[in-house]
Image (cartoon, rainbow, N blue to C red; front, side, top):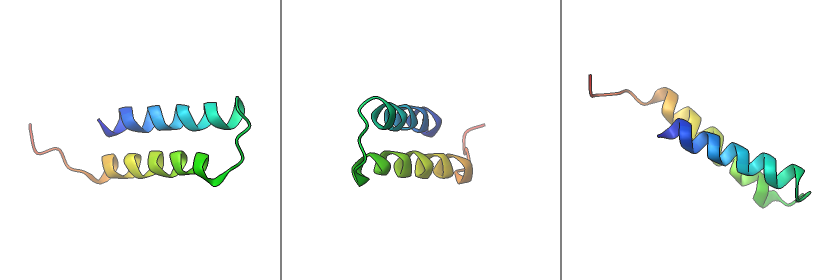
Length: 49
């Protein structure tokens, strides 16, 4: 789930940064949330086997 969220947020960041030339700090929050979701996925243990 976190990998999918990471992918969606990363694509939204790239799309907003390249297509719309948005230079505000808000578009970089998408990148921050994407990295946080990736880190949460990496450090989260799967309890179901």
